[in-house]
Image 1 (cartoon, one colour):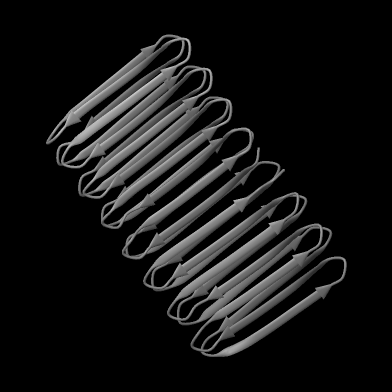
Image 2 (image 1 turned 90 degrees about the vertical axis):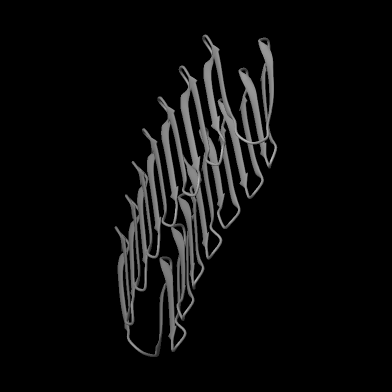
Length: 361
């Protein structure tokens, strides 16, 4: 019913994507994609009372794939793929009260490994590894009454990762990572009766990040970050019975900041700041027993925007926008008993986006 999303996107000449999704009583997904000339993919999926999947893909001139599947009361699968000039694949399957399978395959130049493990009333594991000059890994794990995991990793000159996790009565996770010269990441997390998370990251020469978090009976968070030569940030936070925050930041040669804070039965704050060449705007709104809003905007040749919103018993919003030739946006939203949103966007020639969503009960 609650979750935490942490997304980091480092993208100078070296690409690094870190995604963490904590979901109490459900699971934890940790994805790291290092993609300069050296490719490293780390995926962790923790699912209380269900299983744990750990996938590591080191892909320099030496390829190492490590997959671990921990499934209490069911089995344990450990797959290691070392692929230098000599390929070694080690698969271990521990299944208490059932059996143990250990497969080792040494394959110097070219090879193909197909492993199928059928276990009535338990699960089905299908692993295909094609590894000549083009690397393709296909892993399917069917588990009746539990879930379905489909992982595809295409890695010739163009990298494509497709991960699907179907979990009846629980949720659906769909992750796609296309990474040739144009980088596109699509993550969907459907969780009936809980929420829906949709993350899209298009990153060729133009960077666009779209994050949607629908949480019935709780709130709705919509974040869009368009970042070619013109930067536009749109953040919407709907929280029934609490408030509504709408932040828009248009930043081509002319800076425009629009912040709206609707709080039923409390107040409404609307701030607009147009900033062409150089100036400094300082706005402070103190409202005892209600909240405190502090906005600082320094914008000579180096743009710096600092917005703080303190709201006892409600939340705290901290927004920093550094925008000279190097753009940095930092947004923090603390909401006791509700959630915490932290967004950082570093954008000189190297783009870095850090988004954290903490949502306790």
